[in-house]
Length: 621
Image (cartoon, rainbow, N blue to C red; front, side, top):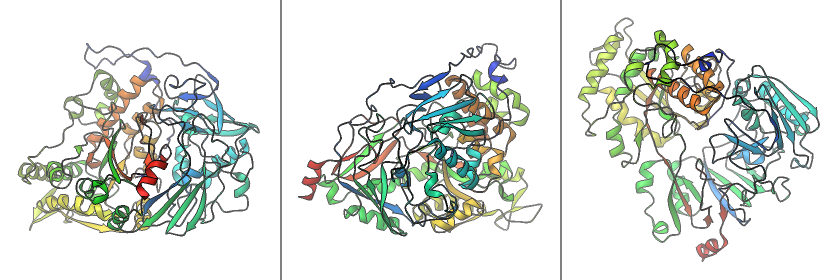
């Protein structure tokens, strides 16, 4: 699942944050702490969303890498489906995997902090106290792979091209940028439409910079299989259209000795072979044709790794704990469809997924039920709203269900034996309130005479066995739902065009939510083809909460507002909540090593791993 980060125009001022707890709240609630004034940032090598970056200005390397990791060797990976494009910045076509290895961004984002960035293409930044603009001072040594320098003109051209010709999400992502200008060959300034958006300077720091000179005379909107020029640590070595792509580590990479890069990008050659069948992909790994596998299917993790190479220690099976928010995975309703416009219908359908049965019978008890859009983090709401959350939610009371203020959000818990009689009754009552009744065994809309029926769009056969038990439960209430399996290209096209009823999807989150929430949930994003707002969420309360998250002046307010947003999203029943895991499940042939201390929010593959010569030799023998 790709995670997009978008922006939306401001719709609410910061006044709510500047006031004490509103009079409606319990009198025992303390007032929010006063907001400390920000200091300007001048020629700083790093920037954080709140406070200062954790690493000193003169740090030698990142704390979660091995700065002495050896370089060399190769790795064979597996991609699923196919590809027909080497330009990952446009909507058209199916981009090859790992194209980001070719491009450097203005700043490097730490994998060990909620949201901090350090110098990469830009060696320092200037930001005023009100964060109304940011200027990047480019590293004079930065060069593209063809030897041409990276200039401020390249940054300006990249930005303007992405918002005019790139994937539509860029247009919304950077909507709050008023202008970008090159102040010198090595200094570029972004001016924002409004002050106070703390995240926007860091969002701009994520910008991958493209070479203007390379794209002159080329149509940026066309797919291409000609390897473009980039400034990153790898270049495309070989392309077999739709079948494989190889990347070669650049010995002449300009940034190899930067503090953010020491101990990273250690593997010489990365090759990705594409497979159209998950079972074939697994067999290729077992045969040694694929070196590394991040397992996402619980059944396979429990049953498919008991083969001789694992038993002999030739293949390592490892669970790596993390502190990443797990977001929300679920069966996502397309609320643009008439059948899903009524929240009571969505609520009823959500009740009929028997997670306990599925976890025991399909997932070997490995998962936890997700009850938040920010699972596995302090950002997740729980219980009844806190004082700080009430202060945020009270202005919208008339537009929200009263239960949101008085009752915790809960999902049904079954015995896992398949008996869901009580849930069927609850769902039936909700559907009756929404104007449905069972006629001749079919759940039917009394006003229109139309049956309650819909289609679940999938591209991965592994999910069919997950969706089927849910559909069987729906059938017990006369609801006719079916699965439509398509290839990845068709799936993406139908997703972009909103030509689906329900999908199995996910919304990844970070510890510092901000502009990407507009992409997921804003009314503006709902109207943009290809945006991440696949559910079609268009709610003015959510729009305003997103704006408050973007403008949150400190961590406490960010957490409280995110929890408030979480409650409103949950009350809208936009998804049938699924499950999450708080560790990475990886398996790899025993020829690699990784740092002993890994980042809290990433397992660093393949950037921070390396081919261990001793292990590699032993494995070959």
